[in-house]
Image (cartoon, rainbow, N blue to C red; front, side, top):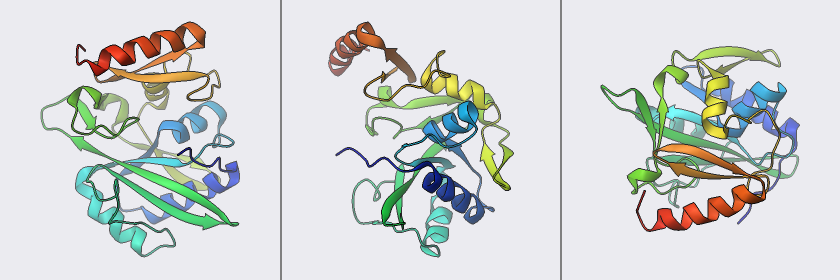
Length: 211
């Protein structure tokens, strides 16, 4: 089921609220929220949620903080009952808003962190995991956004390129303007009509397990 488009000011409010709640937990904004901050200096109008990256070892801290806030979580239902992902909801102005947490694994002696959930949610298939270069992420830094310290990766521009391709500065609509496939544990972006055809071909090939 498609998510509801959320007005920019509500996603903005959620980002500020989460940043103030998680002052003692290492985290940073990721995916579309990060793209909006870097490209537009604000949340993307009509984006459907806020995405936050957190080390998997801090999952219980996240749960503790959220339980003491006005965010709600159904911990009995999938995928909130997995260790890889958590969706928190909050009603503002009569609208159901979402903050989604992706719990990455900081693997010892690896140059990457592993995100099992990412775009696809296929946690058992290793070839669908995203391996994000650590030197793009750490050390985490803060930027000022509406008088609030917001945690972002060390190199936000490189992360946007990693997630959305070299043309990441051009506004596109997901599943319409661009399509994402994970190849060699890295997101690959397809755009335009030819890109859509190639995406479908490669997606079918990928299902066979050939790559």
